[in-house]
Image (tube, rainbow, N blue to C red; front, side, top):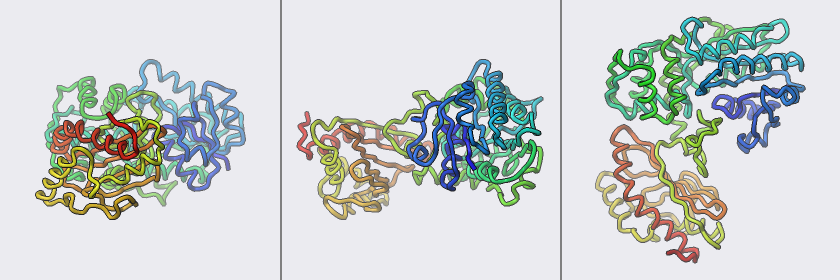
Length: 476
């Protein structure tokens, strides 16, 4: 049974593609640019390039397909996106019928038409367009509210403002009811739907529990061990709220304004079809889904991000794998000259312990002493071997979290800091890249990061000079 996934470079589509490919399904991805698909998916899935407004490419992509996922929407776009969304869905449904596709699976949003925002209304109309010929093709139309998962726009907004603001003056929409659901549960519903023999057009509302946005922020803070005070006020307009979000969260204004607009109306389930049709799936609670998302970030297992399919520079984190979800990063790049990447990486692996950390090793020792006095490990642990490292090794007040021989060394901090910190070394082609990542805990974590930045500017270039000098490369 061949399966086609549209939107596979987006947040949900990317995860779904990995899930179905891992299950051994015959998956074809329909993308505008094959090079925006990661290497793992390219090795496991067939790739078809094109778009829903190119009927020839759409017909080629749908040839021999049994089930087609439609995961395209215009979140964050302005202008007349509503007409574009409907026309795209119309083209897709017609092409599916013409090519003998048996089933379309679509993910839209919870809500009702008379109170829906423009973006939510467009998703509803997209679902109606896809479902308009139930006698010719089966359509499973899933509808979800706020999706909680590492990298999702909703999660990033809630996490960031709950971490950064001890007291929040919020718009009155924080009292609006919604029904959040964890991303893993969303993917489970979508993946399971491919195997189910459900006839006609069915709307399937999914969610875990009804709660207000204020409840969501309070519970998020509690999961992170923080206490927050939320004061709703009627004076914050949607535009002001959007600017407020972009100051404290990683999303762009267009994304923020679309989300804020959608928060003005309730988004809760209106049917029990999920329980009836998928009784073996029980969504986890909001607290648990939020906790799982945090754990995924800290375990460096982020698969996709809300901005994966964006062409904007704000979403680009070049030369970084997985850990790019960390809130703060400070990167330094040096050319290794005529030395080999293997020589540079050998020098990277020799850092620390008795070998020291370069010119300003005294500053590292002072930092180790401070850590020791505050109850941490300090630098006393040194290293197991003067030249060799393996995953799990201790290295002064670091631990080797990941090691890709010749390419990447990731150290996780075990010093006392108000958050979680990593130090990454990469050798890519002729470049040596050193990056500090920091996942702060509350306000104190952010103050700590900015206090340390001036020291980074002195210490880290010295570390890179030490690495290059060990390879025989002449440094200035």
